[in-house]
Image 1: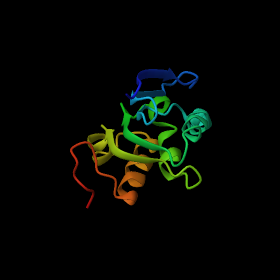
Image 2: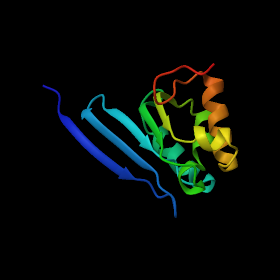
Image 3: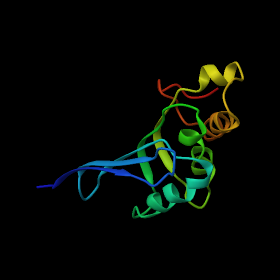
Length: 128
C-alpha cells in the first residue's frame, strides 16, 4: 500500500515567497510550486526542483500576483533549458495587468514565456 505524504517547504526566498508542496503517494508525489521568489532567489527554487529524480514535473505552478517578490524568479524557471521544468497547469493572475501594461516587467516576461511554450492557462485554454 502506498505511503501517503503531505509536505510544505517554505523555500528561503528572502523577502519573497516560494512554497514547494508535495502530496499523495510518497514514491510518486504530486508537486505544486506557489510563487518563485525574487529574481535573486531563483537559484534556490531551481536547486529544489533539481532534487526531483528525472525531469521536474509540477502538477501546478501558481503565481499569486505580479509583485517582484512573488513573480521575479518565475520567468527564469519557465525558460531555463537546463532545468526543463514542466507544469501541467499554470495559474497566473497577470492577464489584466499585462493587457493594460500596468504590471512589472517580470509579469510580461512570464506571460510571453508561458505563451511560447503553449502552456494552458488557469482556465485550461491553450494560448493562441
